[in-house]
Structure formats: C-alpha cells, structure tokens
Length: 418
Image (cartoon, rainbow, N blue to C red):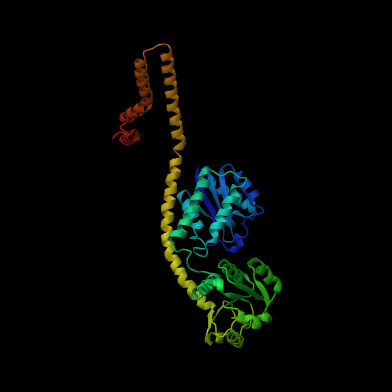
C-alpha cells in the first residue's frame, strides 16, 4: 500500500485549466465511485477548490500506476492527457503526507496562511467518508493533518496578521477603537470585498451596521446575512453622522463622499472622530477629507503597506510551521511503517497461543488420568520452551552458517539478547 497525492493548483496551472478539472458538489459522489472502482485504488479523497484539485489516495503499487490515474482523470473530465500532464504534480509516501499537512496549514495557499483551506480539507474528507470506504492509513493521514494545522495555528503567527484588504480594513478599525461592540459602521458598496468586511465585522459584534449601495436588492441579500440596515447612496449625506467607521468600496468613477459631507457630519457629531477606509480604485472618498480634524482617512495604498508588513511576518512564521510539518510527517511515517508489522505480530501471537493451548490441553488430560502433577508441570514447561524457541533457534543457526552477521545481530536484538 502506498499513499499518493496528485493534482494541479494555482502554481502549476492557469484558471482556464483548473476550472475544467474541478469536481463540483453535484458530481463528487459519482467521481469518487468511479475513482474507487479503479483496481489499484483502495481509498481516496477528492479536494477541489478554486485554486486546486487534488486526489489523495491509498493505492497498490503497480506498473504504469501514474499513467492509469492520469488517464482516469482526463477521461472523467474529457480532457487530452498532454493538456493536463505538464500541470500535474505527484507526491508519494512521506512527500504526500507533508504536502497534505502544508495544504491544511495554509502553507501552500495563494494567500499564505489563509484559514479557509482547513475547512475545505475537512469537508473534502467528510464528503469522501460519506458512503465510501477509506483505508485506515488514509483516514489517519487526514486526522493527523488536522491536528498539525491546529498546532501550526497555535504555535506560530501564521494567521495572526491581516493579508487581505478586507481583513486589513477590519484590523485597522479594531486598532483604533478599543471595542467594535460600541461603534456604528457604514459600508458603502456590496461587492465581494464589502461582503468579507461585513462578515468580519459581524464576527466582532459591531453595535450597528448600515449598507449603502446603488442597487438595493444586492445590498439587501448581504444585509439579511449580517443583520444590517440598507440605505440608498443618496441618503449617505443625511446618515453619515451616525457612523463611527465608514468603509467604502464601489466602482464609482467619481468620489461618493466629499469633504463638505464629512465636515457636516463631524459638526453634527460634535467632532467625535471618524475613521474612513477607502479601498476603492478610483477613490470613493475625496483625498481632502484626510486634512479635516478628527477625520482619519486611509486609502487602499495605506492598507497595502499594512498587508506587506504583515505578509513578511507570516513568511517568518511559515519557517516555524515548516519545521512542525517536517517533524509531524516523520512521526506519521514511523507510525505507518509500524503498521506493516501488525499482521505479522498478530500471526506470531496466534501461533504462540496455539502452541500454548495445545500443550495445556495435554497437561490437563494427563492430570485427569492421575499423572504426578509436578512431573506434568515440568513436562509442560519443557515442551512449551522447546516449541517456542524452535523456529528462532533454526534462524540463528542458519544466519551463523551463512556468515550473515547483520542478520544474526537483528535476530539477537529481536530475542532480547545483549
């Protein structure tokens, strides 16, 4: 049995190819059934995200294994083998184990240290378990990877720093305001970045969320998810004074929030400070707003500087994380190698138990026939010893006859002889 990982990701293939080898939730069960029907595959997990498609397998090592699996993948997606082959990577044994650990820990992600991938790996494992058999080795490999990812998060700062614009905006807000539970936030726009910002803020229990957007229907979908109020863009001027934090990201060609608008809001707030985070390009907030007392304006460039600094911190943490992966993968492989002896140990114990049972029955029969108990015990001990040492003695003699010192030493070690 061999553990194998193969796939493509953002490093090896463009999105145009990655999207063609994706396994959707609707087709996953069918794909797993087809994969497990391959004669060399004993168990499998399919991980498919926007940035990677990977197969984690326990397989029987055989000739042309790689070609057979590539053929299956290409046939399933109706792709030419040459089109896919150059973008595939392969990992066997320890390399497969450490690759999964790196993936689960966010060390192989497009954004170093991103936490979402662990949830995706767990879901892939759960989906593959449902209605499909997994080998014990493959199941143990995934469980071990989950614990390694947790250890990496606990013992390093791999996920402590903001490396996305949305997360950086929320981190900035948390640095300026002691607690977000006491602040009102106005989000301008309803695109992907604002969606992420809204979810981050909801996790920190902001006092109130308002969303202003050109299209009310789109904003309402997000508002329902994060329990926010929807207002029109035209209402921003009248409602701006309510906001302690304004985060804006629209596609407007002209600024939405001007200097005069902010001045009026500050006056109504009796000069209580306002944080404005403008992550739009072109800008949503007039740059002159940053010159107003008590108005703290940050642009997307300011956030990018924060992100670059934090990315450097993550890279330093990644060095620590890689050390953990090396250690843990080595430990797992030691466990895996030990499993290869399990059946042998079980067979050896069974054989010894058989000998003991046979001689015990003879001894009990002799006692029932009136034999001297002391003599029966001596015979039992003598015969049991001879039977148990017979095979090892023959192996020791053969190793000595062959002049095989190494084998002789291994046998001595296994028998506990110094």
